[in-house]
Image (cartoon, rainbow, N blue to C red; front, side, top):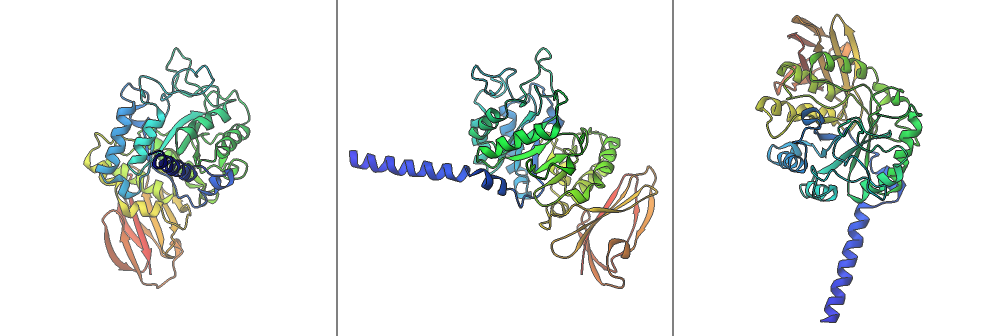
Length: 401
C-alpha cells in the first residue's frame, strides 16, 4: 500500500510539475507567446453592464456558456474579460488585490478555471493609476496598479488570468511610457503569457512606442471610449484608420470595443461598425449582453467571412485609399494574395459609388472572383466595384484572381 501510494504521489507530483510548466515560462518565452498574435477576439462586459449589480461571477459564467451555445467560440471568439468593479474597494492586509466578495464570492481563480474548462481564456482589468476609473465606493474607486505592479502581476498570474486591460485613470500625470513599461515588465516577470491590452486612450500617441521594447504591448487604445451612437463610431473610425502603418503582427491598434447589439445604432450601422473594425484589423471584443442578444446582432457577430478578414494571417491593417465626399475606401492585403475591400458611405444620403481596379491596386484587365462578404455571394469581374450605398452603409468584398 505504501509503495503504491508513493508511486501515486510521485505521479501526481510529476503531473503537477508538467501542468505548471505548461502555464509558466521564462519571461522571454512569455513575450514570444504573442509574436504571431492576431487581433484579439472575445467579450468585455463594460459596454453592456458597466458596474451594475448584475455584473458578477454568475453573469460571467453565463457569458462563457453562451460562447459555446451560440457558436461564438467556433467563430474564433476566445477571451471572456471582466472590466472595472471586479475588485474589492481596498487591498488586503498584505497589500494584494482581492475580488469583490459580493460579486465574485468564489474568487477569480475559480472563475478562470471555469472559463478555461470551456476552452476559453479569461481577462481582468486594472488602471495605471492610484485607482481605477469607476468611483463606486464613496468616490474612493478601486485599487489601481500604480506602485503595485509586481504584486498585482503576481496575483493575476497566480489566478491563471490570460489577459490584462490596463486603463489610464488617476495617473497623477506621471509619464505614461514608464507606467505602462512597469506593468509590462511585471507581467513578463511572472513567466505566464498574459496578453497586455493598453487602454491609454491615445493621449500620448502609444502607436509610436507601445509595440516596442520595453513595453511590447499586444494592443493599445488609439482613442477615447466608444459610445453606442453612430457619431461616436464614425469619429473613432476616422481616428484609427489613418494609423495603419503602426500595426503589425502581435501589435494592434485598438479603436475600442464593439457596440453591436446594444441598441443605439441601426443594423446597417452595426454592419458598418463590424466591417470597418475588421478591415482595420482591430480587436473584436463583443460589448453586448450575450444572454439577451437579438438574432440580427448575433448574425453580424458570427459573419465568418468578415471575421476572416480581421483574422487574416498576413497580419496587416487595411489602408484607406479614398476619403472624399463622404466615401471611404479601405484596402487590406491578404495572405492568399487577394485583397479585402470595404466601401463605406458615412453620409446621410444614398450614393452611387464606383471604385476602379487601379484604385484597389489590382492590375487592369484582370479576371477576378469577387465575394460579397455580407451577401455571401461570388461573382466574376475586373476588380472594380459599383454599388448604390444607402446612408451609413458599407459593402465589403474579398477579391482574388
